[in-house]
Amino acid sequence: MAFAWKAAGLTYNRYLAIAARVVRRSLKEQPRLAAEKRGEMDLRFAKWEVSTANIQPKPVARTKN
Image (cartoon, rainbow, N blue to C red):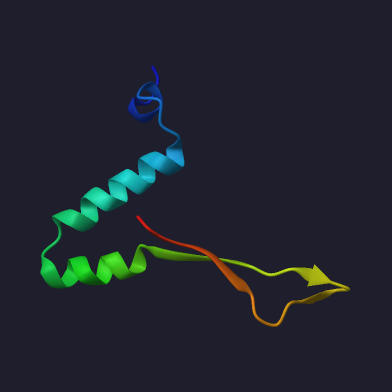
């Protein structure tokens, strides 16, 4: 028997992201705002040369689930 998310053609990570978003949206105002802040992610890129990183990493993307 296959898992429902797998049968629907979703990856496990995508399934978890959808489930987390549904739970966050079902909360009342104050807990929802706090949970939405935790759901934000930053991705940064830093080029490494000779065993040291660039001083200021460049922001690549900012996502909100």
